[in-house]
Image (cartoon, rainbow, N blue to C red; front, side, top):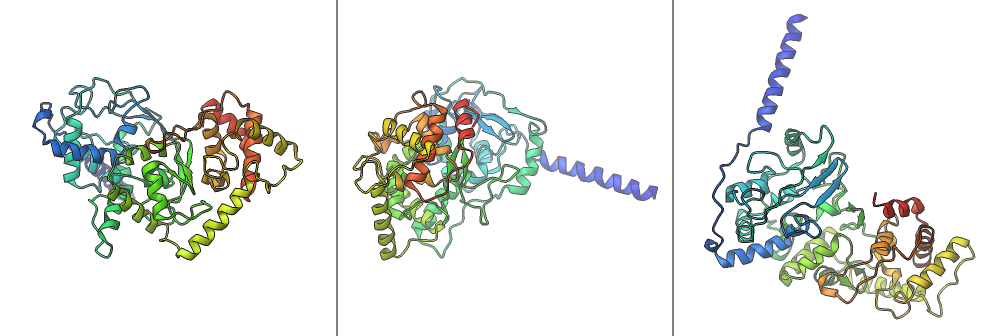
Length: 437
């Protein structure tokens, strides 16, 4: 019995030692002198700038009011707050001493120049699919930018999530390595779209719900099934989309480039910056993204069916508009009456029959599982993407009380959809107002 216990103990020690050795297998890559920006090929830098835009790199690596790419943005997670790093070519506080090899390793393996595991708030599990050629172009672009001295802010993570070595286990379980491999059964446009969506675009990082370990699955029924990002509900990209009018490739292109489509409304929340970045991209790439996303949705509907659904949905939504002669009366329920009065005072100037926004009955935000997006849009307003700068929505947080917002959300959901009433709206309003959402 004693010998057996000793053997088990020795085996566990050896296994533990082996696991630690495996987790620490990435050595430090020697620092280099800051590259001379003038030596990078101008066309390579230009291509890298476009690719960095497709990856929305500046969005996470720039804090509000801060220098671009200098980091410092706080990213709340269920495990604590992670602060993004400085990726300008500053030698002391940025990546100025990183070689091309170190940069590619970080993007593919999730390991920094020093050999430390990176937290998967940085979507290396998607960037691993990006080709080395594209990563070299991004590296050239970043190293050609002005260096900004800004020390990274320390993360605020509770034990044991502050132990980076444990991330090696996360990688072992969830990190699928390997560059994107084209599907020979698909055409070039679909493969380009798949490469961008599954790689640099890292669309699944927001549109796929994460598991208890903070990992977004790459296969299964939950992929692109909708999730929450920065407090906003991110709608599904798959066939379960709640949009009253089914998406088409043309509508997706409109939405992705301009941030607006007449049958689906305006991009808001985290999607605003994505649409602004895509506005600067080639139309071919955006059409490729749309082609791939449409395949995730199950492909386009037959034209006759699409036209029938669209015509019926438009007719229904139009009759529900404020001021339409066939609009239904407001129910006698006190909450609904109050909500209608708030809507008339705060919203009806724009959201009325013949108004500029898409009919509210078509807005996906009203078909979400809770009122988060409606409350956030009402409180914070909508700063439009670059493609539709004339479609802003002013913030109403100072003009509307918690009770009024709750009544407004209740009224809008009931008036413009046939969905059941949202639950927990009152508590959600207070939570969003306090900034705890």
